[in-house]
Image 1 (tube, helix red, strand yellow):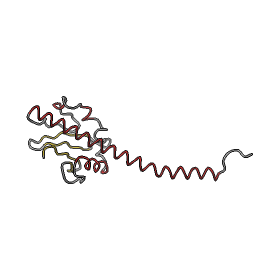
Image 2 (tube, rainbow, N blue to C red):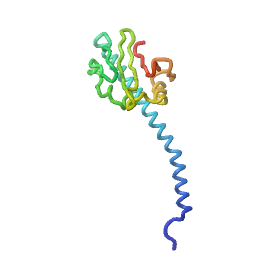
Image 3 (cartoon, rainbow, N blue to C red):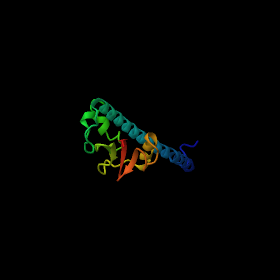
Image 4 (tube, rainbow, N blue to C red):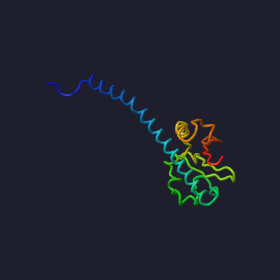
Amino acid sequence: MRRGFTLFEVLVVVVVLGILAAVVVPQFTHASTESKGTALAQSLKTIANAVDQYHARHGAYPPDVGPNFFPAGLAPFMTAEQFLNPQASAGAAFDWDNWGTTMSVTVHGLNSSRPLPSNDVLLITDRLIDDGILNTGRFRSEGGRMRYMLVP
């Protein structure tokens, strides 16, 4: 009576597991990228909604703040955590920009630990909230960062 597995049987199992891993890992990576893009799009929509509510209540837009600072006037309409959470921005940082006539939310990298999201994530985000092209529309690339124009 034989006990254990032969070398050939073990190699067959290893090869089968390798093939399964080769099929599953890219699917997981795609799902992760899709999830980050969806989260970023939802966060930008949440910020846009809060800005619209602020404008409806005050007749003006919140004042400009620096990168990764929460516009205090938005507090009744969203939490600072929603604005500052790295998961909400796919790892990057949000910056509320008020230039008097143009209002936007900028998505940019702060440093090497909080870089701009990958092009794949940005394309998914653009497809969900705009035209799906990163150099045109309301969500577009400008100078190494992404700008979501609320009032163009």
